[in-house]
Image (cartoon, rainbow, N blue to C red):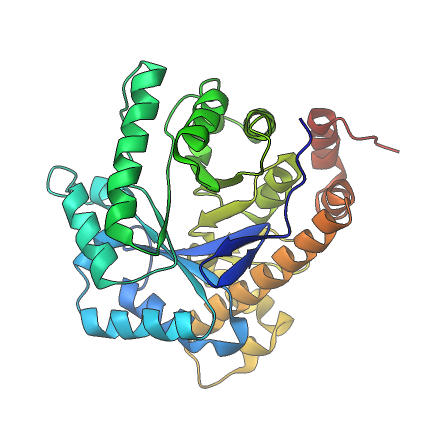
Length: 327
């Protein structure tokens, strides 16, 4: 069933443009502490956008009032804030047994955000009906605790199970957005692209548009390909773990940022640290990349966007998956 992708998702009083990328803030595998990233993102006024922060990190943050102020300042500036359930960080911090849904609910109350991912179960029941029922039950509890903050359910399953499960969860809960981890879509990017296509087709059978978010997708090339296949929303840590070449969209080691300093005005800002200049450089890239991606989506030219921004070899593989002409 053909269901047109909307230009945006209504989030409270804001409209989040689609496709959209959320730079993620995490205490795992990053150089700065979460409150330092929060302060940086809320201070870069001319790079207004959106970001994701972990409930687990907020629970253990060193300066909770500073974090609350930074979140409030960001939201007042029009930045859409997304809270993760914290299960990713609790896993890597070996604290899964101590991080409960009630802890997540407490953070929802103490740190108001616009969107939040539901408290997900990474080892769900094998039975599909029981799986959907569990997600729906947790979603209702999370939404009751979240108030006006919209809860987005996460579905963990194999690639062949995800299409039916995502559609069933969206039908059961009535949500306008569902999420799935990119890593569960397949081993390689082409299998993952096919999986996104299949999930989009299953969601469209509902007769209404349900936004598809991919967890852990922060590579610009991957974002472009998955957008063309039917995904709409993404989050990832690449913005603070690597440096991006504005000319190619390729990612490099963070320490190599000096090679690309001249691509933005941030590289000459002596008032900012090397880290801050690099992150601002990356954020400016992602803002422009997503703007151009949205323009291409609106014009029905995502295939041309991929052709222009992927290498000829990569595009041949992508075109084969998508059914695009090479001419």
